[in-house]
Length: 308
Image 1 (cartoon, rainbow, N blue to C red):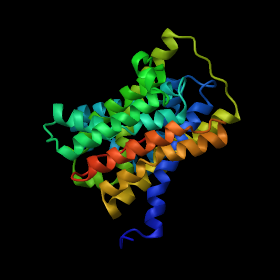
Image 2: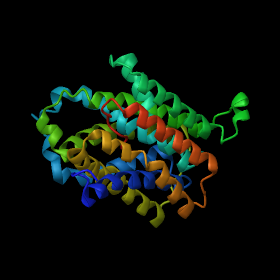
Image 3: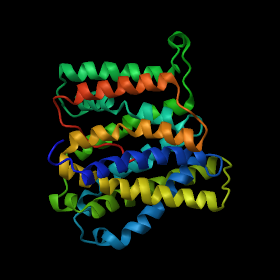
């Protein structure tokens, strides 16, 4: 075992994928209780309130974030306003294990976006890893029946999750090209609050559009309240903090690899709480995705994992 891979470090590495899998399952559980854009806005609004006592100073006039407000506005749009809203929208018509498996194709889109828009160099191992990952996603999309590829009709949820994953790739490349100070980066609560503040504003705009152009309904009650409290505290704050602490101990490559356990935990939680047991093709897709990620990560440093 690596000298840094202590039991406490392993726990830090396991907490984020468990909580992010729980976020997908929770989004599926409450999809009939609250519209997806509204659920996303309420999640981050609660997280914002919880983070204010920890790092509210970062939003004061004169803070270093304001000269970079355009950058944080784009990061908030991509990472919070769009990614999470699209994930909840995907869960309206797709199972949690499907959305998390499609989301695990992230290394492919990191490579594509990095090459096309950020001048990143592509290595042979990355291309091979991308091909394996694409095969894994195709297994999910055709539900393990290859003949369906000829007449493939994507579920809306699959398309939404693919779009969310591409947008997250742009967000992640912005993270690895920092313009803010190392001091702000080192303060996890301040850095997270900055993104949540701008992201919540975008989420509020999307929610206003949802209520303007549709006829949504919210079924208030303890189930929805408990779900909101969980997604605001667990996947939004605790998972982010644990992931940041784990990166400090073992580096981003190892930490990001653990994040790809999210589909496995999503399968277990789906079977336990939704009565949606995994199928054999899920196992095949997971193996292909993990194999692709290992290959693609062999000679590069992984970038940020989704704050799902």
